[in-house]
Amino acid sequence: MAIKPILKIDEPILRRKTKRVNKIDRSILQLIQDLTDTLEKADGVGLAAPQIGSSWRVSVLWLPDEEPYAIINPEIVKRIGEREIEEGCLSLPGYQSRIKRAVSVTVKCLGIDGAPMKIRATELLAQALEHEIDHLDGILYTDHIEGTNKLYKVEERAQTSHDNPLVINQPSQANLAQASASGEKEETNVSN
Ligand SMILES: [Zn+2]
Image (cartoon, rainbow, N blue to C red; front, side, top):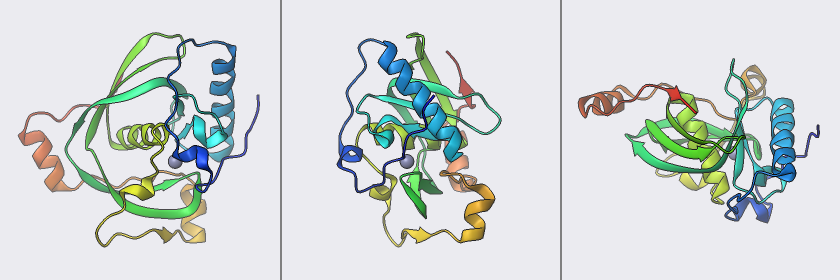
């Protein structure tokens, strides 16, 4: 059990691509525990290893009303559609911006037991997966800010009301229509 400090965006390790895990040994299990403990304290939906100073390709996701779980060596193998949503990051507390994310993603990874997992996700889970896998590639959500969108400070009150690094708005009707018209809209489905 260890709650680690969450590194802020000026830390160089947040800009480095992580190393793939070859063996899920005690140190990796400890890392997963530390990520889980730290994420619980921060009350976020996801945390990636570099955010607590580790360069392994590991992240923990913890969606509201669900159990936390680790994703090891995750890769996005499919992205469908595009939507604009609000996003924030535990490494840049108090700020958010609107950015573009996929409507749905498919991720391949290993679970904590080393078994291959395929996760098909939409909505908050899709956003969290893209955000965490970006971290594992040294990318921050601020890299996705474009056009007239700007980083803005979240009001004190709003911040405490959700205290959640990822805030999601419904995908626009246009995006939803596009996704279903192409017959590729997928259900949120976590399997292992
Ligand atoms: Zn983040």
